[in-house]
Amino acid sequence: MNTIIIDSTITLAAPLSIAMPVAQGGRPNQYNNFPVTAVGQDDEGNPVQTGYLPASTVRGFVRREAGLSAARERGTSTLQQMYSDILGQRADTREETDLQALEALREGDPILDLFGSWSVRSRLLVSNFVPTFPVLPQAVTGVRKDLEDTLGALDFLGETDREAYFSRSDTNADRAAADAVLTKLRRELAKARKAGSDLADLTAAVEAQEESVSKLKEQMGDMANSSRTITEYFALPQGTVLNGRIVIERAKERDLPMLLSALDALSRRPLLGAQVARGCGEIEGRFTVKVDGVVQKVVTVGGWEPARVTDFSAVEQAEVVS
Image 1 (tube, rainbow, N blue to C red):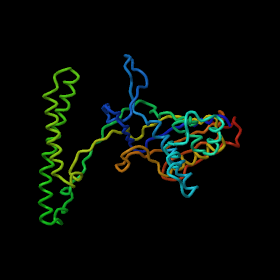
Image 2 (spheres, rainbow, N blue to C red):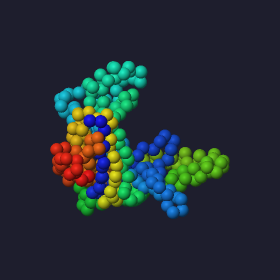
Image 3 (spheres, helix red, strand yellow):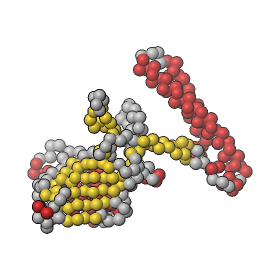
Image 4 (cartoon, helix red, strand yellow):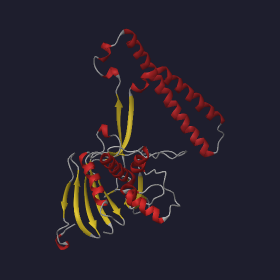
């Protein structure tokens, strides 16, 4: 066994929401940092952009499931082992580890051997999953409800709590208005900074407005998070087909069962990304496993049920249609 290539197709059974971290000092993109990349050019030479499912989301899911499976087999694990298995953080591996010791370390730790760590090279390669046809994330908005939106809920409050609620509601309206002013001031400050203009007055205005917003939030106390709020996130639409590839280099007999177990876990709980409580993230998938170029298995996932595996390993290659 040398190289395992898994040609992968993921179909979105629900919208897919992803929000990548914003780099320190950076700004989110216009899709609230949903990952977007160029996939070619249009007839006029302009980049054609599309949203995509990042490799880190798929790889992270597979590694976490492999780590949890290993932990279940052990029964108990040390904190160091869990960090190593799930996050790839291992204190006893260094760049200068000699080759013989490194090989022994790999042999004794199947997860480290396959997924690697900060100083041990991974043998598992995962691509981004890109739509068959370019598609950009769509904005999805909603409203986080407050108590008065549930008919009759306020009737159960005592007089003191009812007065506190309405006072908080008025304060929240003032807070929302102050937030809008702060957003406008920050936008003006960013423009002035880009233009090289004097920033003293705008900086002072932003700081003063930030203090006003902070005071209003303090007045709302422990009910600040329950107020009516407009929510927004970005998602690729349901039905989008994403294509990617998973590769295991220098494959070992123990590698594929580990990966198939993770795909089975994905099938039983077929959710990726964010906003899963709001109807996002459900997927279906088809994974065609080739060992040294020969189709061995086709794994179908989704439906909140065990993965379906069609095994071609005993079939002559001439009879296999990938």
